[in-house]
Image 1 (cartoon, rainbow, N blue to C red):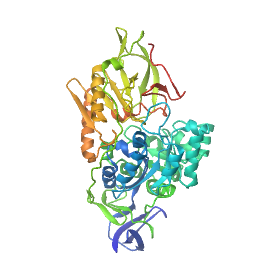
Image 2: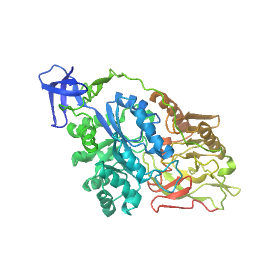
Image 3: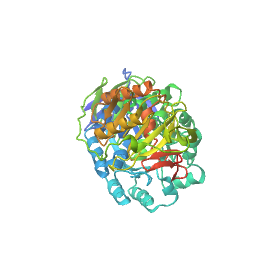
Image 4: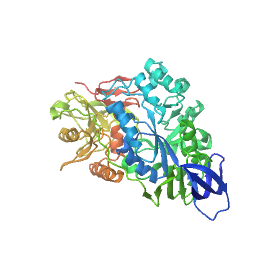
Length: 542
């Protein structure tokens, strides 16, 4: 029997006391209150309530390796990205790889594969396939229901997926940016229990009033923590933390752990904050994750203080997995899985004829995943539209990765600020076709063709050369240590900044320009798309 001593933080009863934990066979057999000289605190391990592991650009084992070091011992992962690329085989890959780590990674079945009919994806999951996957014991919910028009319209397939989750007593996660009023009430009434898309206090409060949990999101691109933190003063019992769409360099920084520390330091009730990171998601998703109660699984972190929260040890199922910042397990590389079939392109494939320089332009918004729409001016040379670096109206190209001969879609974007060169990525939500922005066609072609040659990844082309980061697993992840992927990723971001880009996370912002379920104007491999009207629109006269 193992014995752990310190000040036990009981988030269930909202008290802290000196005591000893007696652990046997991975569970807490007995808790004994006692006076203790130990200054260490025993705190339940943190839970990330919604995450796409693929966005970290590392496979589940390497994701777990970094997360555990930051006190995150469990997560609800929605493998929406790899499932859109590889279907059920991609989902199975994530389950198997995650099972090889000590972190408690649970899964949501992606509800929208593909996300919409307005793009080309690599797979399709109908309601029957979703119902089968929901039966897996490690599946705890139906993943974010992005097709809110389908919910509101009572789409047969959408409602069948929701019904399958309800039948098994598993919650349904939501995705309803800017949805309000009667539409939001109807969406929630359909059984949607969470939402991680709230960008303002008012939006979050309205969703809580509709009975939903608000998952306070802080990712590499979307940063809603500051706006939503005041909700702790009105409805802490309806809050969770969601470190979603997090690139490898931010994963290394331990963002969820940092959010908890920040709120406690700012004077928010420490039990409210800790419950949002532990109790609320554990109870909502019915996770087998301990809360420092007798009979619970022995899952906790040992920290030097509640405010400083320096992590000294991480325990999962009674086993010490992190000690003194060092991991007690070694992640292993996994055999890759992919779905990539594309011929290289030429400058002629992305040439655009027009009789006017005025174009309907996507306006990227820094630190957000939504965009705006505006009429702006590109350059017009010999009857062809070109990027205009003076007005920051740059050519944007989306290339179907699944069809070798499909014609690229071309539009224009404002907000990247590039003065020379191009950025490209096969991480492009949610179908993960290739997306590229650039100042000249030659750079755009070089970037895209490097990604095609690598069968996925990120690239940047400048005047001197093309730099890249190969993502061999589905064109989304690398089976390498996070710090190595983060280093290569930071190098690409460095080159982007050197080329004039001012965005906080240029590749993350780029990856969301293809997501047609988030307002307002986006591009898919099929063309320029108005997400509010849910229809394709012309970007220029031709």
